[in-house]
Image (cartoon, rainbow, N blue to C red; front, side, top):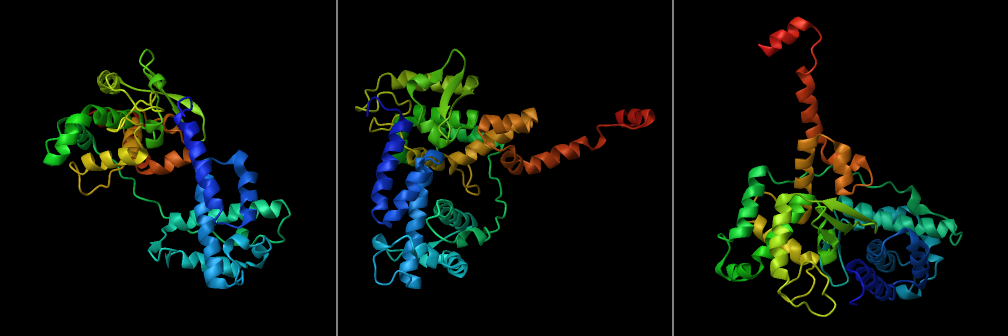
Length: 357
């Protein structure tokens, strides 16, 4: 493990979890996962596995298509027994249902879309490979998605957040005990997220040798596995240098020597830990906005766009593969800029003089 990068280890761990999850699914599903391995991430395949388990459980408990067989005994021919109506009923079922632990579960529009997407991918693969005769999932329309409100911190809230991370004045006495130990690290993490817009997974995956102070850059691994360099400013540099001075005195556990950010247990910090610390500090600044590491990313994107007006630069720095994704997120600001252009161009010289007066 010591010689593996965080991302390599993550892929291995996820593949092992997927292997275990496949034991709960029909054997033919493993063929599907092997078939899409080259074009999908381990994280995506794991998400598919969870979604497909729900689908096959639905077939067993709600349709009777599999008879008395266990899910693991299903033959691929069961897919040809599924009609478009069954899939539509399944989508309706997903809105609210009890899982195998008898816990009530619900799905938002995005949850429904993801589960239908998982089903479509499986059907598409087996249909293309001529292993099934029909593809009913392909004719089911995706749920309509309503745009989510983009939550971000205002400039004064950013300053207040950083002040709170640094001082810890509003924390409980118990939290302040931990704050004395972690405040330098926490400030470095929050400053880095706010100052670069990187994803939380990219943050926790950073190694010591990924930081280049000479060129003011950090090497990160994007969701697709591509490595890029993202550049940071003076405030991020100062926070990182302070943390690294403290980090140099820590002896990490075996296998975590290269990790940039460490937990109190001297292991590489996890995504959940960063999510918790952001929630803790942000809750001291605003109760109305639900701030997560992703919202800090949106905050950075907003500030960068306000300063540059370059939507393509924002898309590139944030690692969006499609600039339309970025445009959708910053549509309101685009409209604001268009309004500002209202009187920028004068058609007659006298009008231009009047506007100056």
